[in-house]
Length: 273
Image 1 (spheres, one colour):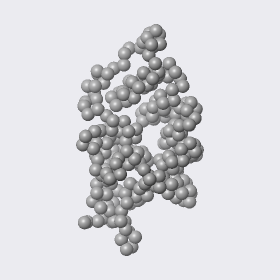
Image 2 (cartoon, helix red, strand yellow):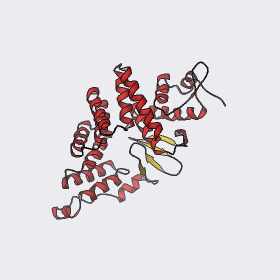
Image 3 (cartoon, one colour):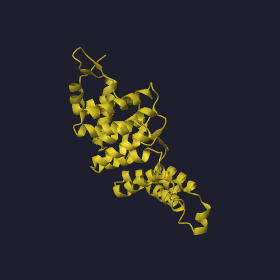
Image 4 (spheres, helix red, strand yellow):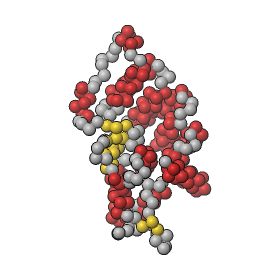
């Protein structure tokens, strides 16, 4: 079986060696080593890295790729390699296709296998309801509708979540999902407001803190990002993605010992699932 060194992979894919090593460090690849301790990659590893390179070329941020691959790894059977599925960028979304179904690895949400543009014409929200009509519809109704609409129209989904919050401002999940939609759309101030609202309402959920950490990192506010990741870990010590992202921040600050500790914790959690 043909094996490839890090240098050969870097040359074939035009991918920096540091990027290749980051995927190994994250636990996505487990290459063998020769007598000189040099990584030896298989052709399957090469296919996986080619997919990651395609996402980078589609301008998907590297940190988002790592977060997405971490989530995808947990969603797949233990005996299935990540190179066994097709991963591609579709506008603002990253889509996974296993030959039978399509889904978004970030959220785990499955997508319809038909033309979303034709679907959105059929699944439009009703016009603004009268007060009496609104009172008959629950916040849960609007929230569930928002979840369904995310796959076809983010604007309609946002409207549904806002309707849910108009009825009940304490629906933490609606704030969280709205924050994610605004985050993906680049409306970062709105995203931050909804993430923080979700965190204040549901004091036991680590997800708003994790998402806020990602947002703060995107906004180049590393200290606030670290604080948010620590909050997520305090609420859920097994939150592997929070450990990994915190490790990346420590690494960028030159704090090697702290980075290694969180990398090891993240890797241990990933391998145990």
